Image (cartoon, rainbow, N blue to C red; front, side, top):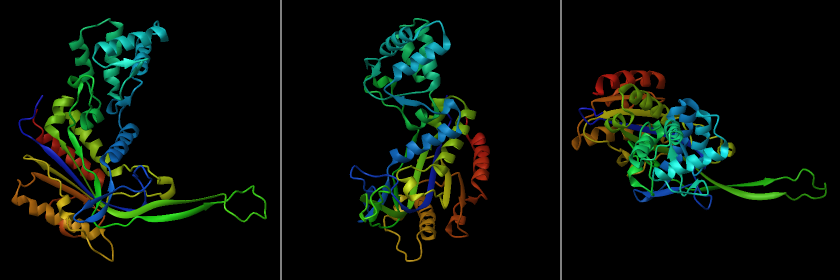
Length: 358
């Protein structure tokens, strides 16, 4: 099923973080990037996509979230037993292993050789095929590709064993970067041994934690026409996009979260629908924001101005909604303000229903 036009959703956010280390490298340091000649705080797209998938898992339906695992044989075997209680565990494992290999996914010792991304629906379809003794590879691969979970459709699936099982992602999520230059700082800490002798004044443990604070620009997009092909019906697409936007706004990577309690929300969220191509507005911050009295308002204004500037190169969006915790400013010039995220999602969904053409 295809739309009669290309339709892209752009999501932009400005979000401030206090001292934190939500995404660190192999040395434990907060991730950074050079941009515009200066060092920026960075949160990888993989980190935030994982947080979004966790949000899907908590707030969506079971069918919204796939399972990424090497234990695919056990996962499908469990479905076989759920469907047919007369099949014992050993027989279910053998049936599962056989059907998965026939579909083109290689296993060893009842485990996939690489992580495999599978939806609950797809696992059940494979389980039923195993019970029915289906052996045709094309038919089995069709079962693996049909009924993808929302996160598989949005974030994609790569299968090295058989590229025909790949699922092209309909969304793109950018690495979040700070709108300004940052410096990494160090928190020195000690821990007391509470059972040590009273005459021992030393600490039981010494250490340091690296952190920084930043105001981030975050961006993601979804090719709505591609998502419609994957999910097959307008209602599923609209509900999935609502969940995607809600997850984008409310999720937070969990790195060192118990240490820093950095549970913030976006100060501004902008949704746009475009018919030509998606547009990342990080160029607004190629020249870093400079401020001694906060970065949020200045970052929001720069984002809004860049939104207008790029119209010299691309078509104007057919729809733009935004919600902001800041009063006034440049955002009022680019779209329609909503009073809350829930109102934005409700009105956005109504517009989508009219715009998506099956």
